[in-house]
Amino acid sequence: MIYLDQAATTAVRREVLEAMWPYLTAEFGNPSSHHEVGEAAERGLTDARARVAAALGVRASEVVFTSGGTEAANLAIKGIVLASTRGRHIVTSAIEHPAVLESCDYLERFHGAEVTVLPVDADGLVDPVAFTAALRDDTALATIMYANNEIGTVQPIAELAALAHARGVPFHTDAVQAAGWLPIDLHTLGADALSLSGHKLGAPKGIGALAVRARIPLEPVIHGGGQERGRRSGTENVAGAVALATALDLVPSSVARAGEVAALRDRFIDRVLSTVPDARLTGSRMHRLPGHASFCFPGTSGESVLLGLEARGIVCSSGSACAAGSDEPSDVLLAIGLTPEIAQTAVRFTFGSEITEAELDEVARELVDSVAAVRSLG
Image (cartoon, rainbow, N blue to C red; front, top):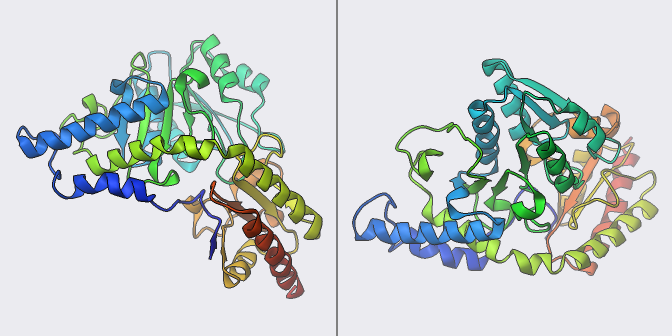
C-alpha cells in the first residue's frame, strides 16, 4: 500500500510511542495529585510543555494543551474575541477549516459578533490589500490559516500578521497543516496565537496545543477545575502532551527534507498534468506545502477515482477528512472559482518526507488508468 493521505492523519512514530509509554503505565498519575505518582506525571507534563514552547518560540506558560487542533482553534477564536475590549468584529478567509468558520459563526449567532469573510484568488491566496481594508477599530481578531488542507496553498502569514498589528489587531493562525514543513516559531511569524494538532505530526489523535501570547486576554471555553492556568479545564492528557513534544522534537528532520520533497512533488504534478487529459491543479503552484498535490479531473467523480486507486493499492482522498460523508462540493474549491461539477472531481495526494520517487511514479501511472476507467463509464 502507498499511503498518500497524510493531511488527514499520520501514523504514530515509534519514537513517540516509546516516549508516551511510561505515562500510560508506571507514571500514569493525575498531574494535579499531590503524591509521588501524580508528581511524576506533573514532571512529565512540565517537561513536555517546555519542549513544545521551545518549538513554538514562546514561554512555557503560553502553551495550552488541548484535545486537538479543532479545540485549539475554538479556544483561540472564542477565547480571544469574548475577552476582547476592542469589539466583536472578526476577519477571516473563505477557505478556513470548519473549526475556524464554525467558531466565527457561533460568535456571530450567540454573541453579536460581526464576521468579515475575505475571498481568495484562484490560487487560494488572501489579498493583503483586502485584508488591510477589512481591519477596523473594533476588530477583535484576525484569523487566517497558514496552509490549506485541501489545496495546499501557503498564506503570507508574517505579512498578514504585521498588517494586523499595525492596526492593533491580534492575529491567530491555524498551523495544523503547516507544522512539520514550515516555520512555526511565533517570533518568525509575528502571530499572537497558533493552533496545532498532534496527529498530523506523528503523535496520536486526541492531543493538540494552542500557543497564545500572555498579553492577549483569553476567556476559557471549557470550565472546571482550572487546569492549564485556568484557560482549559480538565485533567491533562500527559501521555499525549509528551507525544506532541516528541513529535515536534522530530520535526527538524522532516523540514531538512522539505526541499527534496517539494522537488518530488513538482515532478509528480508535472507528470500528472502532462499524462492525464484535462487534469487541473488546484491551489498555488509556487506557494504550496512540500508534500501536497491536488487536482480536479473533469468528466470523472473524485470518489470513483479514489476507489479505482485504492483497488490498485494507493490510498488518497477527495479533500478534507472533516467533510467526510458530505455530498456537497467543497467550499474551498468553490471559493477558488471552480464550478460545483468540477469541484466534485477533486483528488488530493499528501505525503511525508519518507516518500520516494519510485512510489510517486507508480501513483502517476496508476492514476492515468484510474481516471481513464472512470471516464469510460461515462
